[in-house]
Length: 429
Image (cartoon, rainbow, N blue to C red; front, top):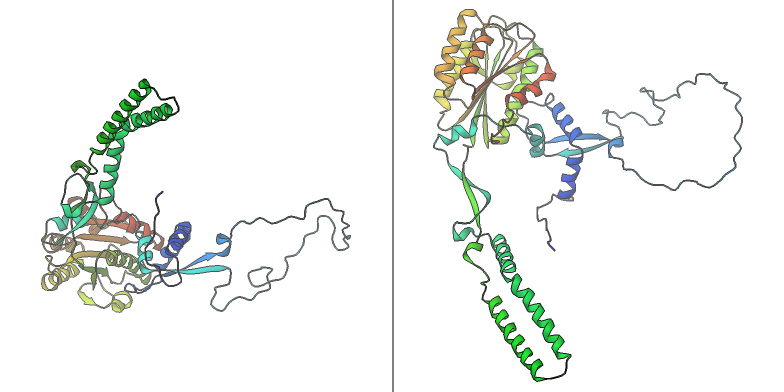
């Protein structure tokens, strides 16, 4: 019989095994709460998990109770107030029309919900299930980054320091059982015959037979003990494979059009997309820096508050932001030391004469050095020249350039999952 001892450390007054079982049971409620949290947080608010409310009816357990049972005689009082067909008014209650006698809470959270906290790591795991950073592994294999070794099963050959004792002893035990099977069966037969001879009267024939059986028993014992306890081909070694270890540093460029056509609703939609990408990179890298670039006819690097909420008017020149981004990469973020990601959001407006300059800037100073470039166009307008340019770039740079259209906030999370979904045969970052 095998015993499994779970030695993982538990938090104070918590059971890790029960917690994992609880999270697995209420995955639907947790995913919904995680998705709703995207619209409430700031882009760099990463120091806490999330509170998950679960209605009490969802955590109730079925129970058995003793019924009244038996045969009973009852007399019910008559009815003096109602006739068949009368409509009964709803009983008076709170503002929601309920019949309860309790009062609504000041913060809107009643006692009917069970609320628990998930950690930051659990929050990211649910948010980015089945997603991967495209081109991450391929890019690291061609660079000078460090490598790490990961377990990949067992092997027949290897370093003596990597011997898997349990698997080796299991293989040796199975070999001994297989090789000694015939001798063990014959040994049991010989012992049975000797036992039968002891019940018979002593005679010369019985004594001769007993001596022959004893000689055969000794020979069988020698045969069984000559089988080695451990042989060379029983040894199993822990197999470790060399995998690229990504650089722990990444920079995320957030580029957004802030011209007069960009309303605050469009900016809020873009903010959700930037927020999701930041969380995803945070899950894969130890150090993240965020660069905010806003543009109309001119581009400038700003802080988060100015990026999302400052108002501007005027036309749109996208190449100004791309040129500024190329200069920042050259001055501060060498591609040899940094993993570079770009997220651009716009309503599609751009001067027609500027599209050619955008394509030149992307091809010469940005796309050769980035890990992944994503562009979302927000709104219901027909595709303009900028979208057509980016469609061509997507065909030429399928592994590191992707575009999507978004009409409203509800599409942000599905669009993000489409941009970063894990393809068949692709390893997660």
